[in-house]
Image (cartoon, rainbow, N blue to C red; front, side, top):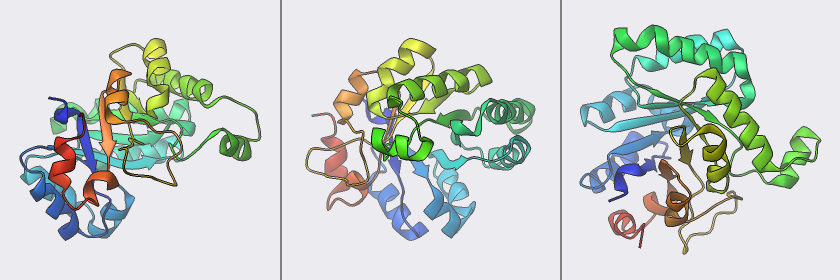
Length: 232
């Protein structure tokens, strides 16, 4: 019932490996994340291939640059009819405002309804790392809330945030403000680089709109079996 809210991360260096997973999950998953590794290896070709297969695409390139540079990059990305696109909220309000302007200028011409998502704080970062990076004592939940509010003010459709911050984001930004959640933990899988995680059922119960799951599925001996047991 909830599989339409699962986005499988195709974190592979080659198209052949990624499409093997798409083939295996053909009857259950329709939404896939393309990140740096696969995009840099295969380029826009992988986007076109997935679109020809009628798959939805979450292009997770996390743009972070001066406003005009990101504005131009968004216009190029929208050509590929992607469904979601990410930006670091720490790029600031003006950058995110220009992101929204780019979409408004292109959406009718291209016939796209791409959701713009601001990345808040990576799930690999905990409070100690936050102090190391910014040099200040600050609760992660407070910073995530502030960044989500800034993204909403700029006109973005939602944010990428850990499941632990879903409730505070929904309370502050409203139920219709999307929260896409990485860092999903399956009980038998341990990740050294994921600090703030929850299970699929826990994340959905807190109000996550979409769950991004990668290695727990794609590195499994039986990805389809993992999918079928996600919410049990």
